[in-house]
Image 1 (spheres, rainbow, N blue to C red):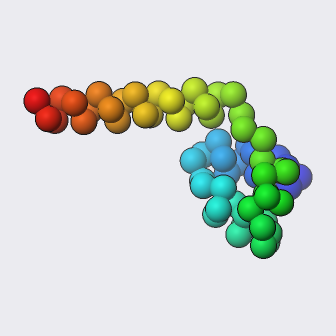
Image 2: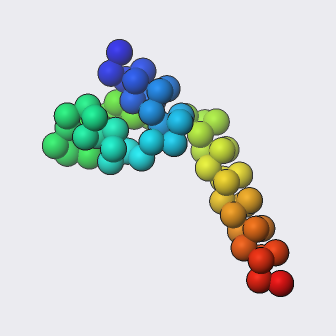
Length: 62
């Protein structure tokens, strides 16, 4: 249940690992990393957000 909560519910919805760590009561971030595997679609979403952000920044500059 903790693993599912950490990966599916929180990380997939953009909650930072530091926040998840506190929510799970961990004192070390490395403990949270055991439960939190990076989901493939999350990587894709993060990269798309970066691309969108960079494109928006360019259009605002110019």
